Image (cartoon, rainbow, N blue to C red):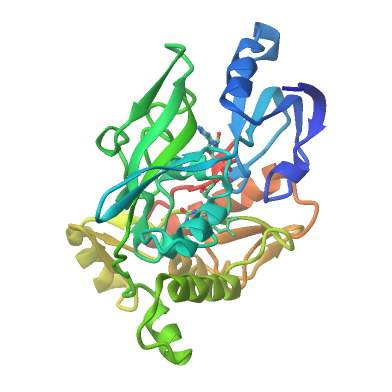
Amino acid sequence: MQVLENISLKPYNTFGINARAKFFAELHSDNDIAAFFSSLTPERMPFLILGGGSNILFTKDFEGSVGCIRSKGIVKLMEDDSHVYLKIAAGEVWDDVVKYAVDHGWGGIENLSLIPGNAGTGPVQNIGAYGVELKDVIYSVEVADVIARHYRAFRPADCEFGYRSSIFKKKAKDRFIITGICLKLDKQPVLKLDYGDIRQELKNAGINRPSISAVRDIIIKIRSRKLPDPSILGNAGSFFMNPVISADDFARLIRQFPLMPSFRSGDEIKIPGAWLIEQCGFKGKRFGDAGVHGQQPLVLVNYGSATGAEILALAEKIIGSVNRKFGLRMEKEVNIF
Ligand SMILES: Cc1cc2nc3c(=O)[nH]c(=O)nc-3n(C[C@H](O)[C@H](O)[C@H](O)COP(=O)(O)OP(=O)(O)OC[C@H]3O[C@@H](n4cnc5c(N)ncnc54)[C@H](O)[C@@H]3O)c2cc1C
């Protein structure tokens, strides 16, 4: 492990924010992770673990140590008649894992195609898309416990998975470094096609009996059309989560705003944040180099040289505006540093 000093984090975050790390190391193995922690003398603290940098906004320089997880490896641990269990190093690129599973005909994660970032970061916010969440396929999460200084594994029930949330993002933030995950995938895949445009797109493509590979291709097509590519336009995907409210609160709101869209989420109601932001007039708006994406208003973008503070100020402006108009609180999905 090589520790570098005063490194620009611009290539390491998809917003393309030019913050600097006082100390920086790429961690290619569990040994590197252990060495990184041994290197954390008081003058090298605080520390930050970085994956693909696709869910992070740097609002200032990081005056401590950044450890960037780059460990690789996908191993089939075991299989039975119906499932295969894969152990995946935290630094594997998530979409490479999806491709690997789909290429082998193992189902369960094809709807999570093209989500940027590391496999090991998936549990942090229980990544989700097109009706599937990581919690549906996770078998265990392997971690290094920074406080107790040992390694352990979490079963899904201990991960406190919720909507874009987990114990790793909330209660135990900064305590556990995820070193690997184990997925339980289906050898007889059950397709999930009822979300968004999947069925329609398959029909348009003339596909009547889709394979998981066809589903992956369609999802990649839809996502590429709807979401900005971070290598062209800096962004971190949805900056906000959709507000989730009770059925009673929704009944009150819909009387005042009859056109408000909604969808059920268990006993609660989710309101599409994109609609709320659009109603407040922010869709496609640009403030200097910070902006709101023209097609997907949940996504904030960096047109070039926006600072993290400018993007955060825009986010706060949107939160205030939605709150004044609808009385709803937009929570940030992106991790702010
Ligand atoms: C264009 C685009 C589309 C997106 N679409 C989706 C989507 O559909 N669904 C979705 O859920 N997300 C989506 N995202 C968000 C993002 O891709 C995911 O949250 C992803 O899991 C982040 O992974 P990362 O490695 O880039 O995380 P980073 O941004 O590097 O880190 C995110 C947080 O996790 C922590 N962390 C990182 N690695 C570890 C580790 N090994 N152990 C402990 N903590 C760690 C970091 O400290 C940080 O707090 C999208 C992002 C973009 C840019």
